[in-house]
Image (cartoon, rainbow, N blue to C red; front, side, top):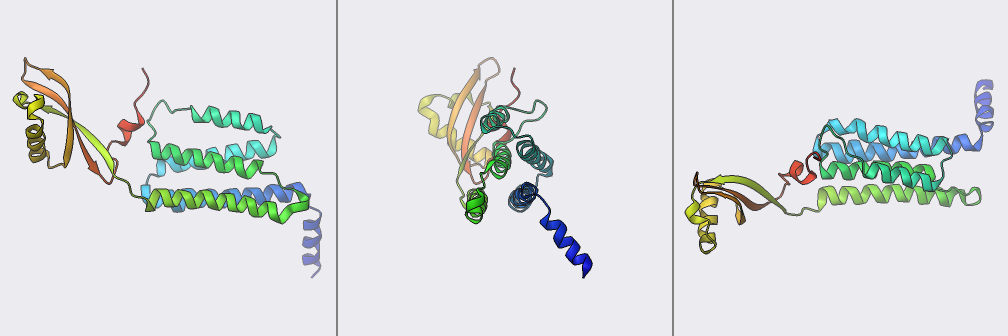
Amino acid sequence: MQDVEKVVKEMKDIPMDTIELITRFGINFVALFILVRIIYYPTHKNKDFLFTFFIFNFIIFTLLCTTHIKQGIAFGLFAIFSIMRYRTVTIPIKEMGYFFICLALGMINSLSIIDNHLLFSDWMILLFSNASILLLTVILDRFISLTHENFKEITYERVDLITPNKREELIEDLKNRTGLPIHRVEIKNINFLRDTAKVHVFYNAKENENRLEVAGGDDD
């Protein structure tokens, strides 16, 4: 009994700032875990980005909570991260979106103003903000299915079909050969010495099959 009373007394002696920091950390961790482990990973199955998502969120959260950085500098950090790119690997667009969400959660949970006079209301607003971000993310990622226009580059040898008046015949020939639902083509290059042409064929699909091409390669 005395041990319980001692623990309760020690908890009462904990500064309010420490309790607030622990609470903020708990909210941030739960929100980040739901985002990365429950929303992102079951769908994309790419564990290489899990470390990056977690570590950048915790860096931003810890930095803003413990060093008393002003909000202007915090948004400056966010701007720096927004133009940052890895030089060794291309980051797909969707993973980059999750990366920004992780940074945003860290900023929101560390910089949100908690008024002691409106304590319950401010915490509810913070929880609602986290829940809204997570809900919007899961809706956009899992339940809104849009068609992607994919493309492939093909070396085509029937240069007699590349003329504009035979475009429909060209598309039908490419459909039969590739088995893809091609709806348009672009002639990128013609080599009359080898009787070949570089052709970009475009077709619709549920998945984005050109994620790396869309994300872009390394800058020259």
